[in-house]
Length: 123
Picture (cartoon, rainbow, N blue to C red):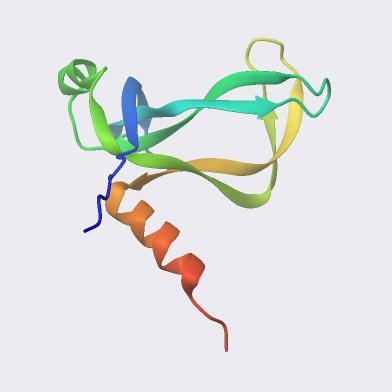
């Protein structure tokens, strides 16, 4: 008999932001944050802790977005390689080049990606 443990990864809604489309219509995006991760600095070689965050558009009103802060839901935040772009660090004004972004994956998408896509064979 097998004793399997299923570990659910969760994200937490930590904030929301209002955006405006080109046609002037407004919408909101929820900012979701994954769990704590340890990362080694490329510059100093020292370890520090961080958490991946990303924004996910939604159809909710502002009161609903505000009420959802702190809610946890199954899923992960994945690092995705993209064409290089410039990013300004708000606190320092420094402009850096980035070649990735973060994307929310639902629990189902995460399972498929980790179990199916990695096991596919190329012919």
